[in-house]
Length: 397
Ligand SMILES: *Cc1c(COP(=O)(O)O)cnc(C)c1O
Image 1 (spheres, rainbow, N blue to C red):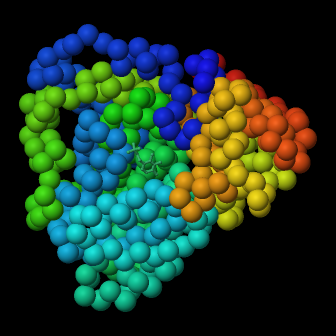
Image 2: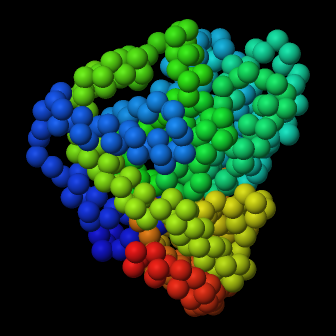
Image 3: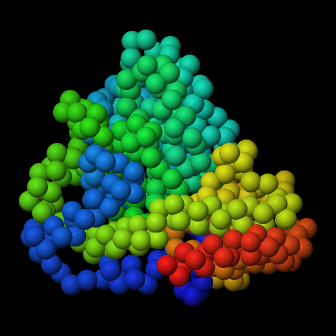
């Protein structure tokens, strides 16, 4: 693997030099006003990126998975019922965590490539007249299949059923790359991590809690220590943590938020859409299909690409690493061997993306797939040329 090439895995993502430097800082007293000058602006910026006025932001030394655990253990009790769809490996893992915590899980299994079925949720919630269901869990962007679900539609389904359940959303591979509307969608807990849209090393679980979720923490009985938001809030009131924070990463988070907000969230989202669309026109030119079933589900952060029947898609990933020093994502779980994934989120440009598409083409031709060298790249080049003026403008500002 060459350190000079960008990675095309859907997290950890490529790190801008400035953020690497921001994480590399001298030791400071992590119980001091100086630490507060890192902590409080980082929390405020994350709140802005979530598009919330009031969410309580907590940042744990952990990863996205710790964010899932924070969401569950602070708001629920053993035996509580939750409603969740399984449409890929990440939703599957969150379900597994619910089961291991002794929750009653109503799982709606859909195809790996489908989105969260808001209409099925509405039926189930409408039928739950006793309000046994305490929380609806939704994975905004299923990273295994490249499927973005409509969280606004999930909220509308809950409202249509007049159901008081909380809405817990995994935004690990969407937040800071694709539009996320904590307040508008009535999200109660949002979960993300540092190593995807925030362009940092792994090491932080970042969560937002609504007022309703904060109220639920008063009665939730699931055991929690490391991820207890009450302990965390007490620490924050004194510019501190209940334990030792990852100060360098938090400094990086602060800078990452500044970068994103300076570019402008709308510009960040438009850049991800444009880059993703370039990947999609390339996939079409190759004559291949995305795992996502329909265009409304296409993710702007990761594309899972189906390879022809009888071909092991994982060979592309292995070959790319060995031969060209480039990292792509393998298929996971039910779609292992059937798809390979191109991650296109975080610190990425049109031109970097073209290098990934060119590499994928070389691999597919090397491995005997019926694909013409340059076909996908040319299609993406045509597409990116049209958007070039817009991207120069962003860079110049
Ligand atoms: C990466 C990811 C996770 C897991 O996060 P870790 O930081 O690896 O613990 C969870 N959900 C989604 C959608 C992800 O993409």
